[in-house]
Length: 187
Image: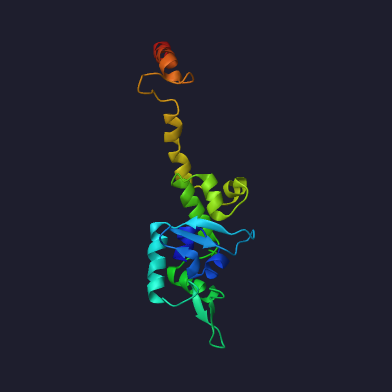
């Protein structure tokens, strides 16, 4: 679960991940089995790297990152996580949350942290960035409100004192003051 939150990988991509596809030196993960059928490389952040190193130390001879034993005793990739997922949600007292919601959460946090949406599309494996924006970049109301600072900075004075031509505070600020004064005098 934590690795999905740190990488934005789909459940199937995580469960099919092999150690041979994890490159600690390059800090990248190769995803061979993708929804689009096209392999992709994704960067590993420090938390994903930390977790993967812990998992590698726990099972140094495993072929798969999430390996299990089949009924016949042969090793294979973990098939599913439904039981563990339900148990984790129950213990955390979380309702109405799907595994895929971790992918949405990753994408939203990436976008709200200032990450490039085109890079996010590549990380998620989308061929069209519009899909990324429409489907995964769910921004919190608080984040949207904080964008007021970006909007204010768009027309702020520069170092040389010039303002953008649309900055009306300098030119029309006195008119607003005069209007307010006339309202006071008329009352």
